[in-house]
Image (tube, rainbow, N blue to C red; front, side):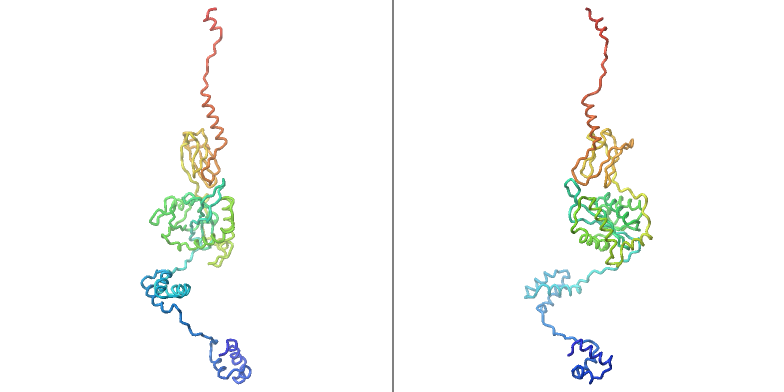
Length: 401
């Protein structure tokens, strides 16, 4: 039998150069019958070694019968049963064969390819960093990242938060939409506790947020992460590409590095779409609605009465209030950067503090401290009493000399 190179050479001599079998015989030295066989064969020659019996062959029937009874049985259990019957082969060849034949008894789940219209959907989810985030005062804190990805362009955005409550998710969604620069038709969430209240229905606060934008929403079925598979793949990308070999000074540094990384990721060619997300985003924005001005207020607001010890507690930290407002009601507004409070009756500023994400701290405004000391000094002195001063001549007239 001739090799592939000689087979191709013989056919070239015959069909390209037009040589006879006798001439090819003289040039190559091959027998005329070998040359005729090479010319008659339209496929290159192959050397096929006869198959050797495998140690697994006597146990294939047992494997099939076990899979017929229970298609979900693990390969390790199957191998242990066969070893009890005398199987002495390797693990790899056994597992490979089980993987090959299992789909006959348990068909794999199939997925349809999803096609997104420009501006149709924006998928949202929460991703948890591997390590806690430094927040100052020598403390670290567990954080989450609100992630967003547009279905058509595959442009991504992300915002760091420190709780799963809707007040933080609302901030994260608003920041992500601001980074993407336009409004999709619907927001896609899984059944996150702050978003879903049961039965596939949104919570009132989440519905209010969507109505204020306004956008629609889709609450996914339980245990169906494939429904937002584009964002799940981006989570793996963040875990393997953003996190390694990075350090962060604080939460602001984390967010700055995350924004820079998402800008870089959006400028790369996407593996699935074979296009650059930033370029597709520019075209997608033309089909989307502009962001409302202003965006829905993401601050958390609540009302308290100023106690005699004038402090308010938020997120385990105490912030001082104006002691002159003791006993009066104030409205507190907590954003990601500041804690402010104003008197409900007069609109006076009760406090303005920079928000801290470290825990168990107390913040006292120097102005509030001085006012407290002034009020305490007045209480110690007591009220001012006016005493009548009489001329001494009156006493001389009353007391005889």
